[in-house]
Length: 439
Image (cartoon, rainbow, N blue to C red; front, side, top):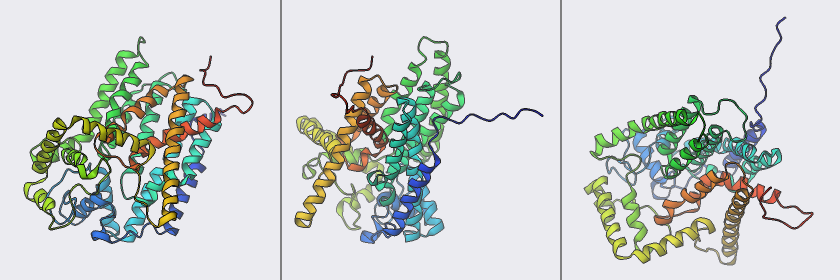
């Protein structure tokens, strides 16, 4: 009889129990805590905010339009992937219904739980430490702060973190980190890399600032080897796949607005809001008010989105040219907010004060442990640490100059989880802690 051969187990595959436990915990919380019962305030505005509005327009036959209130016309305010998925949920389960909320939050939870296996593989490939990989993945699956955006927010934070974590996994595979495979930079992997970044762009375009650094880091691994030129060719092919993902959206925008809008068309309006003195560098609500008779909304509606954003952009640049120092002061303030936490208004006396202090300490603590863990990884020459440094430097960059909220850090939190576990596992209780690099 012919000898049966078994496929060797993938050493970087996380135990399936991590995913299922994380998913079950999230779905139970959604169901028992009734987070799917979203308040009716401002005509269901908290059900996805602008994304919910666009999804409603899609589901009710008005097309990709109406991001604020009423029927204001076509929009490119946000990338299309999440609103289109939400519109599909509305079509199947009703617009703004509790069942639709439960379904979209469950979909968020699936991708949030599926981020844990990516964390496991990143940790295992880079640190070659089974316990570190397990603890990091389990921490993501079980820690309440890691699941909050999946179970409470009808927004793109959970999918963005999922796509970004798996893009890092693909980068490590292409570079050959932790691997002894003979063929690393296969065409299939490069094509998947381009597809994944295309999905990121169509979900949340801000992480694209990291894409060039990521691609160059992969190619640099083949420098002075026969694979160098082929890797460049495959990277170009990957770029074509990326452009193909964006092409339908860009064609639609040019057809509708007669303007080149690659990902989203709201930058000028957001930039103008960022320099208004009444905001003092803090986050604001909707950039365009959701009240039917508000003058700003009526101006947006009458001018059309492209013209309105262009006008706001000109006003913002005029202000920045005259107040450069103030603009930099606000950027430094947002830098602090991004890593330390955006203060919330304190409500309900001493109890509210305690809750706010606890929230800020928890947020800031993870930033500190994440940065220290990254620094220690760089000192110890951990594979991939340079790539992760570029992620920490580039991913928040746009937020420093426009606006910042706690949720904007979420795509980096899979890495922060790994670095936090690594920092504490590196502490040697038998002797003084040392920052000296490994020999």
